[in-house]
Image (cartoon, rainbow, N blue to C red; front, top):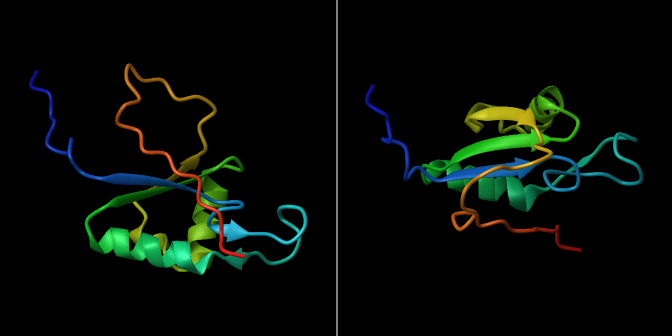
Length: 104
């Protein structure tokens, strides 16, 4: 068997939903969320630049897909998934994690 490493250098970004892509007033799920417009624009630009975008949520893949539909980016997202509870890897030197908060 020959292993396929053809996508090893394809940039990939994972985006969280609640509190990141969608901003809630009060408790999550109460009322209509606000779209984090600067983040949506960043996602659109990253997609144009060839970045694969995955969206995850602790509420699950269905919730993540509803959020991207609400934000108008469902067509440029490569996948929706449940937010991982644990990440396992032999090396996290590749990970560039960023905590991004909306501007106030």
